[in-house]
Image (cartoon, rainbow, N blue to C red; front, side, top):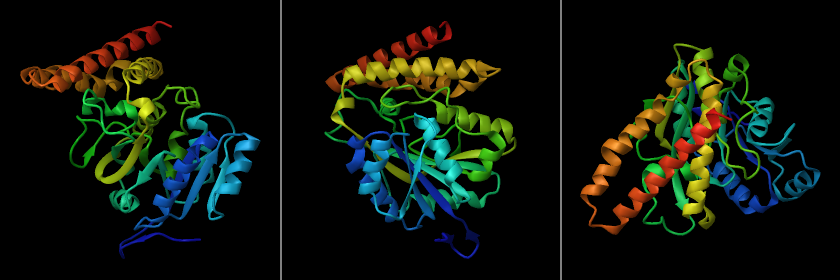
Length: 312
């Protein structure tokens, strides 16, 4: 058993959870695991969680090195997988990274530093898009959430935030004993685009454990691969609509749905007051016009999905 140390003042063990549902992600999974083994602060364990499929489990057991702990989920979907990983974890901190992401070599070191504050329950970091081809000129940085990355509008420095993004997040393991696990009623299953299990959990954590905080630390960096299949307007439209539906389902589960959506309101306000006007001023550049169109399409579809979800 490896123990992770950080200076003389701080000693902590970190379990890192990666989950996958398909053999098609093998190369991504191996690259992700390799990036975790290169950390300046070595994890206690790397946990690979697999859907409950015999063929899938046998395949990865034959491909992944023996020092990676393989765990089989009780069900299907991202929430079930993460919950299985948490229950198996032996570390005081449980960190999560997507199977198609690469961790910067100081990722864990920078995450763990923030847990020196006993009031910190969870820490997440910056997620940079790693485009398979270069970023399309019509794709604005404000929409990087569509490809599972940090978006323009998030804090540029360390800050307390409402929720973490699943590709780059961590929590004290003790938090799960007090707040429960990730909700299996929402969130992704396979390639379906539903989301917000990480948002719902983050909010529930701070509700169940008041006077504590969740931090966003942009020094803790993960690079998230963006395949060509997501660099098109069809994917933007589908993901935006699914976002709206997911937000409606998530907000309906809360006693005060208006208050939990304050981040989304601030985001929309920033788009209307700054993001779009700034591009209109520079409308002589074709990419600014195309980005305004993309922002408008995405915003309309999120709102449409939200309204449909509220009334379904």
